[in-house]
Image 1 (cartoon, one colour):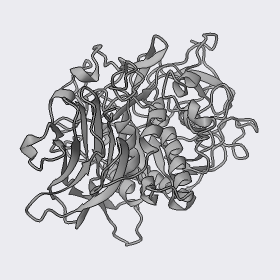
Image 2 (cartoon, helix red, strand yellow):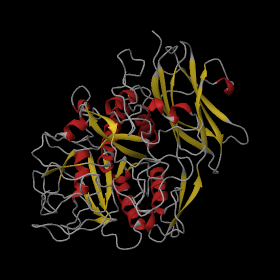
Image 3 (cartoon, helix red, strand yellow):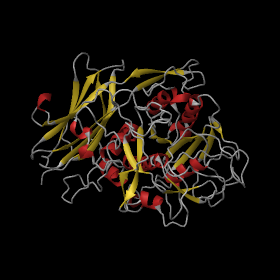
Image 4 (cartoon, one colour):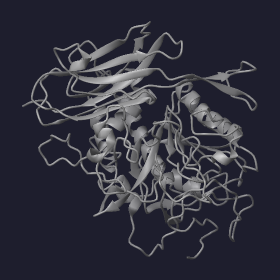
Length: 562
């Protein structure tokens, strides 16, 4: 396979590896390098592949319809970010970038400083950026008018780069006056480079703690390419406060099948040199969501086109969708639309909305499957309904599929009704962000009673999201992470979610529940047995840290009886 301009991906089927500096081909610029972390390689351009166009369209996440009237959602004025080992090119700074480059990054950084011209320009970072913000007419990104701030870490060396990666993430989060709504991580750290003694994926690597801290303090939603397995780059996929993304491939012209190269939460791929499986400690699963990532058309730093595959290109589909939803929140709030609080911007709302609106089982046209547009299958050819997550209340997420496949238009439908409750009748589709006070030895909760009866035989989907509390051990008290500082995990409180008859307060009468003891998400996907009145109950089951209140976001989608 011929090389192009020094940006060369791995051969198809190779798993994502830890980033390394590579020597560029000729012609090349000084200090330009590539980390090609996509799970795939270059596809000859003669092939009739338009996968970026398709992945953003109805075959993929159905975001392109939101770009056009009457929706007109393009991510305009919404700041998003990315952190990579390198960075995309930017016209006026880098020689390789032309004035007509369709990927126009707002600002490029190196660690916590402005990037220097022609240094650490990276094909992989440019490819990822193109999924989010490309303005190419044929290969339009998910949020073409969003403001992208790109942070580069630079050369990794032979020791852990987690302090530098945390610095870069913090610098991106502080851009745009501290208003960056989501940050993409299409890279990670191998466990072999973690300095802890006998490191495991328990959420306490420095970079993982940094991300959970920044998500809460800077109110930005981190979206991470899923990379667990053997010999991979699983840190920070053991985070609690972000979204981890696996990738789908097309079957029959639609992104509806998990790609076989995904590693997932419980990978079974053959071991490399007999290495141990890298997966989360305990029963907590890593994958939150699936998005298109196979044979995606991407744009290089010089504007040329390549095709590659991997979770690296799935996660930016999610970040771009967040930009569209954030634009909707801002528009509704500024217009004074009822039930649209400014808190709708919060990352917990975005997380609950995206996970709850994901596709699982294609609707037959009667609406009973919530209008879902595809049936998503795992690598074994099974749907979400065949998983333990569907059968076991203690397991909220499918081990490979999370809650399902990203659907930007359905996320719009989930978000549009606004915020309701608790303590008032709620519409069939909606969301809320609020808080519970400390249970102080006894459980406390909120009820969300549906205003109309629900249709028997229809499905209910509900997702509850909250955050782990991580604090910065701020030695110099400047409210910033500095090299040499650390974080303190104060733990994750335990919330549970129940579906009850509207007239019952007895949890033993619940029809279904999501009661994980280890996750920061609860998710119910349940078929209503008979037409009647129902409610959701959020329970503050156990307090772990000493904060006086526990914020959470809840999203729901039901079918009202005719």
